[in-house]
Image 1 (cartoon, one colour):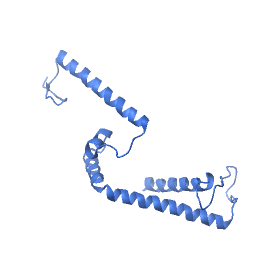
Image 2 (cartoon, rainbow, N blue to C red):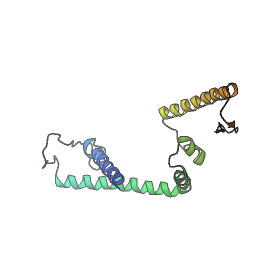
Image 3 (cartoon, rainbow, N blue to C red):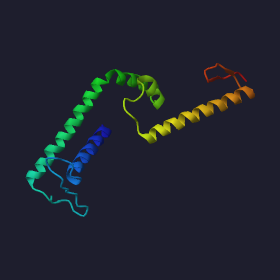
Image 4 (tube, helix red, strand yellow):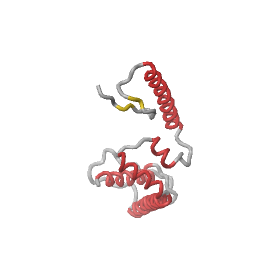
Length: 156
């Protein structure tokens, strides 16, 4: 699909940038070959064909290793993956809480900003639930409350 093709293109660009622009490869070394933004079509490389071949080989190794790691992870987590897939088929859109109830907490420490967002969201939901409960007890409701937090519509 176009999405998968775009993902491959982005991964390839990222890997080449890591090697060519940022010099983050042991074999090529800590040298940078940034792309010339002013170059027209037939851009000349500031390195030899042999270096170009090494860059290509190293880029392929990085992409192949990432691909293999992804396959291994999917195989290892297949049971959890199937749970999430089944819920997505059922609901189409799932939330953080849905994933948490299906497969549990992350096996690693999350990003602080994301964790703060989730914590604040949960606190807001609790406050909103308390406020809604107060409203339900003080205001007549159209329908019956079935004690699940959902209101069953009544007949007018």
